Amino acid sequence: MHLRLGAEGGRAAALLPNGVSISLYQESILKSVSLLLALCLLVFAPAVWAKPCAVTISGNDQMRFDQNAIKLAPDCTEVRLTLKHTGKMAATVMGHNWVLTKTADFQAVANAGLRAKIEDDYLPKADPRVIAHTKVIGGGQSSTITFSTAKLVKGGAYTFFCSFPGHWAMMKGTLSFG
Ligand code: CO
Image (cartoon, rainbow, N blue to C red):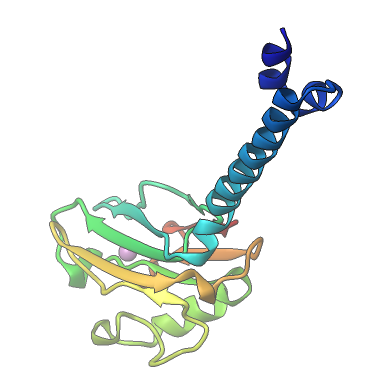
């Protein structure tokens, strides 16, 4: 009975006056500490070690992305994003890219993209407002990029869009992190 109480919980064992129960109590403390350490590792590990996350999004000949919201897990440290063009039309006619900016910058960058060339992926050159972007691709092609979530603020408002002239009105969505 004493042994059973001791094994069941430290509090019950501590009340028992014999040595066996006390040593069981100490053992249960050690077990608790070990469990606590294990939990700490589980909780803090994602923040310490790189946690890549993959996102795949498609664009088609109907000038549409297949999703309008992307959610990144709070422990994601590096995004590996693949854009696929599931249509058949050429990049010069129905080109798509995936561009990420703060929502506050989206409209200005999209407008600036109208004046850029396809060689520059319809984006201003080296624009710091562009957080990440793929190449402009045509039907059957794909483009993969990786970028760090260190560039993002948790809870911030971000918009992704295609900067091919005229596409952003239809091809846009929100990205959230955390
Ligand atoms: Co497009």
